[in-house]
Image (cartoon, rainbow over all chains, first blue to last red; front, top):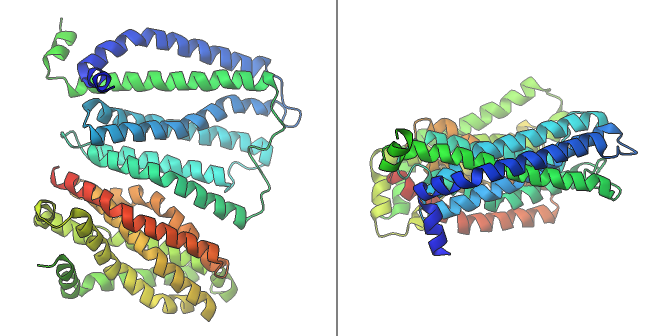
Length: 244
Length: 214
């Protein structure tokens, strides 16, 4: 385990190894997203209540799932960066924050577009919507703190602390927003209570979720590689790589 | 010197800071009847949420005060290097924030409640929610100030980082008052306070170490 950490943790090893994985991951992402989108948007049945607009689900649900899990991934990277002081983990926190913020924004935007035909409004202070919005601000906080911290050796540590405190706080925020909602106004809308989804609908959804995960991994690795090159620009191996 | 006595001395010798917090709160609360409506029923309906939002803003505004000065004159570095455990010093910092911002706010709550047309019982629950909730705000604000101290745009950054963490306190505090003192919210607020008291000073200590190594 430690050895594995050590091997992947060095920026050079990460750069060279991830380079070999990249084409495979890119192909997988492309296939999954294409299959999922075509299947979901063209061939999956429309909902008997929601009609064609249910197809927004094939983008919205993967984005929302990824928004939450990318925060967890970022916080795990932050923990590794704080405890083992791996350079690569610090770069991972820095590059995950904008991606996570983008995913959260996508979930919010598609959700609001779905809300208009279904609920008759773009925005409603529903518990889930509110906690997703708060999640967006948590991402923005980490992003802002990281970019204000500069490039020093310890620059990323404050952002890592913030990401970890955020991870511990997320359940508290989630539950408090739930209580606020459930006791504040009657539950007129529920996002989850749908008649059990038929296979023809959840199969393309599953493909899309996997595709989104692959896309996220791909985008994360690409950004991480760029970040590694920038940070290690004075080292010998980067010099050799850039000017052969 | 005992760090607790030191904080108290700083507080007593610069009363302007405390006065500033109080005046800020009173002025902002005064703006709402002017902007929304002087109608007592409308004001009483929004009073709890409004006072909590103003308390939150005042806490954020006061967050940097003690820590920025300590960072600038090197006292923070001495704290990190000294023998006293860092989590204890950070707890004292949060306590100082509460003394200069939370406690005065608690004292003027009856006044604010009267300005916003709350009756006696509602003011009592407001006091109770502030008593349990304001220390949580102080602990989080101290953490935020430690995270951003010494950064270029630190003071502009702080509210952005910390405000999302204050939302649970805001919700529980407001709901406690608006539900007329339902004990569930009180217990939850107390639980949140105990959790924050034991965990946040540790994180603040880590942040302090980072701040001086920057």
